[in-house]
Image (tube, rainbow, N blue to C red; front, top):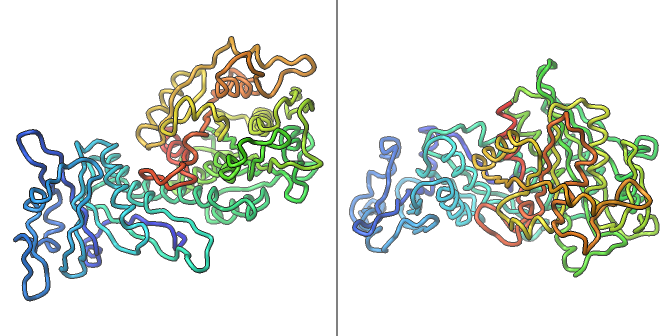
Length: 504
């Protein structure tokens, strides 16, 4: 992993000897009882705690002895999730104990506790062991929160991020699964955070080849006028940037070369989005648009995680990459384009470009790939953010059983999704007088911009292939450091897809 990536390491007895910070959970008390420390695995950590007995007393050997429960009472700790008290100590290499509130021990509480620890150690190279957690998925959630909240990305010589904290969980959980999810998510974050003057569709292809080099994948980069001759949407958007032309990056993962369920993933990879001729307003909204390729980046991270876990399924990921710029070769409002499957679209708003590139990917998938499942993911509409804020992605599908599977995977992984309706009455708003349909519902006919965008994409799929669309505009980026997410790209989708793919 890159030096700036926080890491989780498997627990070994030997690893305790190098621990510098020990995080001990404080469980919420009730009205009659104060919060108390909640120790499990005591035998494993006894060597670290053997000198921690009496409050605020130092022995001559230099180790600080601490009665932990006395500190809970002295500092009136409530055990509220995320509450943290740092206790400086000196025992072997141990330099601090964190008393960390874990609330009632729910998944959300353990994520808050992990985020508090990770953010506290974010700018350090400290080695931390945590006793927080629960059964299986709860400990995995805590472990991921520790590392994800400590993530940093900087392009700097004077203030570069050259190291990061490491975390060990003194609990039983599926370490390999957590590690694969973490590496996939951090890869995705790096791709999103890279400034747009440093990344292009061709750069994205190079990153795919580099990050997947050791795995059983094949990568084909479709670019150039001949290769993309049927990709009317991708070319209409990407031709606005002749020096950094559009490309479809096709990644195929087939671990055993035998008949396995085939999942085709299509991701929006707009490397920067000005809105084109329909320029974004207010202009400051453009600053975050380096993250408009978060869907494609999440697919790359998910394929990496699936390959790391050697999952028994076939995956084809289609990264639909382009820049949406304002130039002499940019598409215009009122243009009519022909998509891969032959359907024509009247472009009303050039800032509704994501659905145009996805439409070509969906058409290609059905024509060439014979998928058992067809899933697309994109930072598509501001309307999704208005409807669901930054806690849930909008999920659209008419397959209710598949929706339930993803809802469960979302709750398990932390990438939560909400099943939204495909309102047939809204489809009329996409009708065009000169093409098969328009790329956006014209106001004031209907609202529901995320719904009408999903209805647009549904026109490029067939009823016989289960299809799910994820609009991650709200959850794909964070406006501030919040919980396990840094300001900027969150890496949403990697954990969701990895969790679901393991069920096939």
